[in-house]
Image (cartoon, one colour):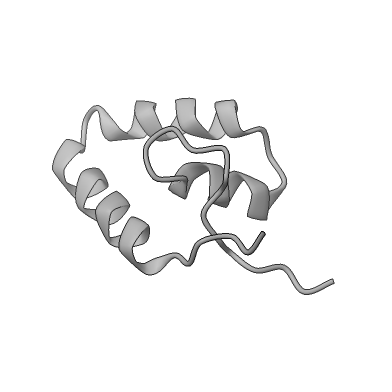
Length: 62
């Protein structure tokens, strides 16, 4: 099976973290909590990386 990294259709903001969770096969809520915990001490770099990923990742084909 050819896995492709795409934004999730189960979006909270833009579907980036949900897309990573689907690609990695982990729970979306867990990955969102981990991302939030990592973002607290390094807020600006995490926000910039999220914005870049939101613009680069393709939408999921329906």
